[in-house]
Image (cartoon, rainbow, N blue to C red; front, side):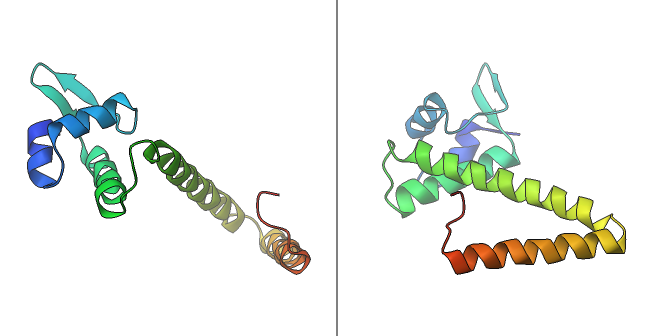
Length: 120
């Protein structure tokens, strides 16, 4: 765990005031808070790096950040779910895995040929 001041020293463009604003907006959710301020773990630091890239590197305003981060979070959850499904499928007998793989290819090919977008 590192303090907010250590974090700001590591992430050069980040200022404590901006960090606090992101915390107030719910973009960053530090693990703990002590008398000296917030404490951050490696996951917090990685997310702050992403927010800095989006804000400073790509020029996204504070009003856009919650939307983009929500989409990133949804994508992350989807990837996690797909990994779990892939693991469950890989543990099935060969005939079940083959059936699932075949059906998946048919469904995906049908969507591609009909022009159906994902999520529709």
